[in-house]
Image (cartoon, rainbow, N blue to C red; front, side, top):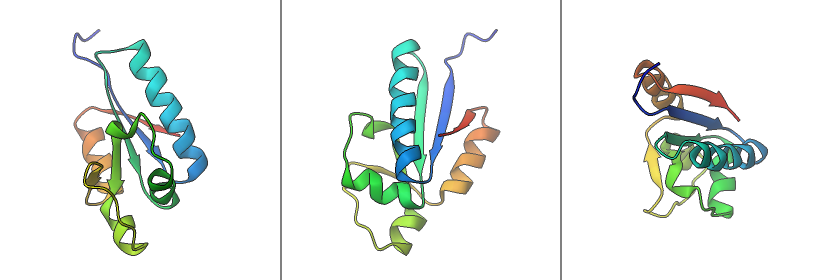
Length: 101
């Protein structure tokens, strides 16, 4: 077993999966405070995230492709990734666990 902290990327593509992802992320960090977690959102989950701020927003990674295609504006405080699909693949290659919410 490794001594390095757990690293989890949670993918959400719609409002319902975003709600699950936020709950999962909060539970994950509560159970493993040293862990790293990111919630990568694309498609309809981007608009849902912007409409309903949450205590887990520090973990959010908004898909810039979705923001552009849906002509959405996000606060500068929310992190963006150029393309959710590429970001997820890169994180997995780096050893992060993947979970679809």
